[in-house]
Amino acid sequence: MPKIEIYTQPFCPYCERAVALLTRKGVPFEEFDAPHGSQARKDAIARSGGRTTVPQIFIDGRSIGGSDDLMALERAGKLDTLLAG
Image 1: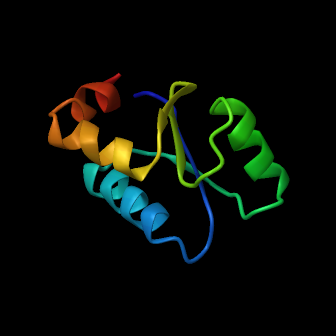
Image 2: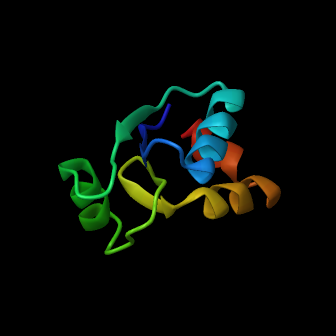
């Protein structure tokens, strides 16, 4: 299984949507609370190449983007392949 990390913040509907999809897929993931101004948010920005929005999702250390990007992978039938490692 690949290592999946997701940086989120409270009350973020996009974060909730991404977490819900990963949960439905039954894959383990690590969630980081990354509200504006936090060290976790700074880490997510640095790791993602400057993206400042949440969620930021990483699979095996590779940035795949945010919620819309995750959903696009799912619609294209590519997400399961990434999650299978």
